[in-house]
Amino acid sequence: MWICMRYNETDTVVDFQLCHDLGLILSVLSLIYLLVCFPLGVCYNVLLVVVNLSNKVSMTMPDVYFVNMAIAGLVLNLVAPVELLGSTFTRWHAWEYNDEVHITLLILFNVSSLVIMYSTTLLSLDYYIERALPRTYMSSVYNTKHVCGFIWGGAVLTSFSSLLFYVCNHISTKMVECSKMQNKEAADAIMMFIGYAVPAVAVLYAFVLILRIRKESTPLDQDSARLDPSIHRLLLASVCVQFVLWTPYYMTLLVHTIAGAPGYINNGHYLPTYNFVRCVSKLLAFSSSFAMPLMYRQMNKNFSGKLQRLLRRLHCRDRSCPHERSAVQQVVT
Image (cartoon, rainbow, N blue to C red; front, side):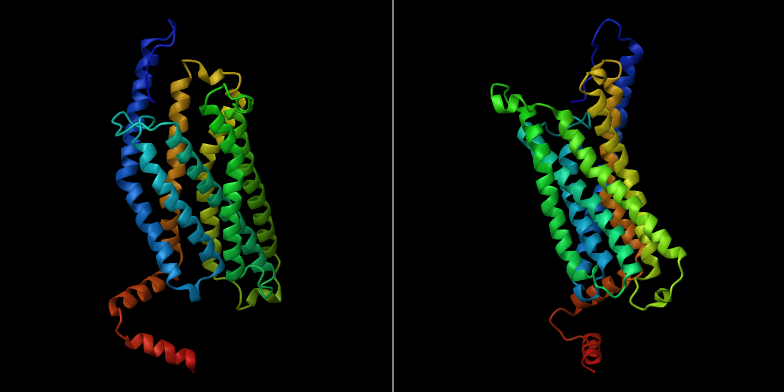
């Protein structure tokens, strides 16, 4: 809860006013997100999923990963209004939730963050495989769908270890088993390492390999099985945007892991500023749920064609449209 109070006699009026100002700024930012970014995120994520799933035949390996990230974005869209309308983010809060709701929101947020980061990472690695070995079908749509299933399963299992620490941190200390695990810093350290450090190293390694492939001119460079060149720009932009938006959140986890245990950030002078930075970093993380589908919509040149086919199909409904008949005849011939 965002409460400004004097922790000791040394707190000045300036510190008290700063706390109020930071709370007001955070409230305004939260409302702007809910009014602008939230509806955009829901609409574009649903559009990305529906358009691609209605054109499964024409889906490519990057499309599968972006659909996976869009589904994770929808989960973030589910979490965002519940958190942003709570007392932690805004003064004009609509509700206050209990520990059970807090744990549930935390699980959904962590799972979504892991899915987004690892989908981005595996997209980079599969793009390198497609560039280096275009005829092996190791990065085919069929294989990618199974990989995305493993991503969700792995994200849930990975979040389970952190969940134990968070749950034990919110229940009674009378339970001997949980009293030994009441360490939120350990949970943050797990998420920092698995959710950020590992994907960052893997993406950096993939980009080094991709740059090496681009510098080496081979006969395979003219291969028709290669991905569209625009996918490279989309990949680069998506990786950069994801890490720019998620890095502040994971940095706050790192700060809490290092300085939280000794209690440095619990000082009355630094706590309001730390809480403000932590909430803003989470707002940036929520922003990935609308930035990614919006960027996909603008940079993927095949998306407009898929959307037009879907709209024509909805317009025709049960009627047999001329363009559908001609498409079927072309496939048959």
